[in-house]
Length: 470
Image (cartoon, rainbow, N blue to C red):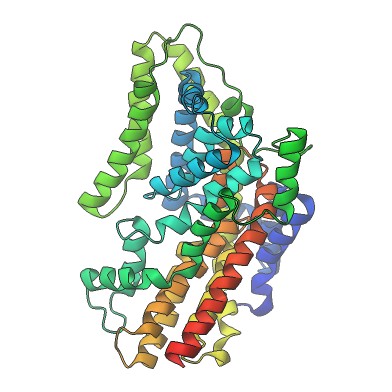
């Protein structure tokens, strides 16, 4: 298992600093900024390394894409608020007098419904269910957990998602996988072995239905919400500006729930899914831009002045900026981790442990550590699939066997673990944003649940290795 160049233990210092400070200070921006600064000093880049890092990592197409996506989502949510769409959606649900359990189950189902984008899913679930959830005295941490656990874990199991296309693309040319068609077929066969993703989604449903009792920090958060009526702890800093949480409907507007809410959402879904089916690439950012433009025109037709529409759009941009700032530093830290060879170092220290029976387990654990340390699942896939899948084919004699399918699924599940619960992950940041939760509170309450699922998944990979492979 050959690893790329790295700087030894120095490679993991920035990520370790970021994660430790995030839990100690509960200030994500400060923690990420310090970690980036410490990292460039350890890398020998000097004081100017910090601004250079920001320029190199943020002046990229990938960051520009998510930056624009965030802006359009912020504007769309602000438009929803200003037209009274979310308030009316809340009233429709309120008429059904949903209990705490039913509110959580509905949030869970909504998250699975928006399967095509792990970016849109947590924001959609959080922003549309937040008022209903608050009324049911469900903590913002719990709502963020539900939104987070039905985003990446669901997307990675859907054969028509961008995740499937990406992972299958990395498989082409490995072993007996010769083209996109065979790669997708292998990916589909590996889905039942993706224990972490499957169990993460099921775990949320069982918690919502109260088959599994709350425990850890989430239990305290839920007690606070139910007994004290505080959906946020005292001193919490919600990862969404007041512009998006306290925007009242425009006076005199007659809200049309279809035109002001369901139609824009349908535009996003149809464009994202339609472009994926047509060109194998979901144009999510373009979908939100189209929805913003159409809803802006509808607002003007409904009598809202152009100046007020533009002010609302500006408020949407302001409200989303806390998340954008954290994403900017998270991208910078990820760029720095690539320069230092963080993932390569983690892989290198496990080289001597590999065997056919332990390959799925170790692959899952390594992918989980890399993704949690870097906050990126797709980056983890790009590193681990070319390293671990050829080994699996070697052990299987070039055949598509249990060791190959379990190893592919282990990479996918391990990568999702970090994307799902790392404080550096963009998906976790978006879940905190949608639920308007304190980001570190979200991570702190979610982590025990994610670790529980990861431990069960690890045991299952060990059992698969010992029973069917070893």
